[in-house]
Amino acid sequence: GSSFDSWLEEEGIYEEVTSVAIKRVLARQISDAMREQSLSKSAMALRMATSRSSLDRLLDPQNDAVSLQTLTKAAQAVGRTLRLELV
Image (cartoon, rainbow, N blue to C red):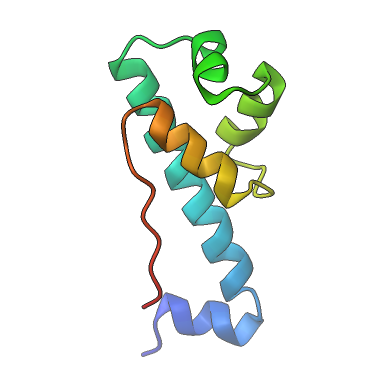
């Protein structure tokens, strides 16, 4: 049998689906870290030196147009490191 990844590739949507999934995971991790630290959106935006609306876009799992710079700022704001790798 074929794998789900193979099916996504056959349909020509593997990259798109993978991007959305990665963004959703990152948004959830950032949100969880904020909750663990009792960090409000306003306080988080202040730490990131950005607007609250920009943070809302970052935390929106449907919005996959987020820069690496923004993700890095968010990770640093919650005391984490963003790590990317090619596999």
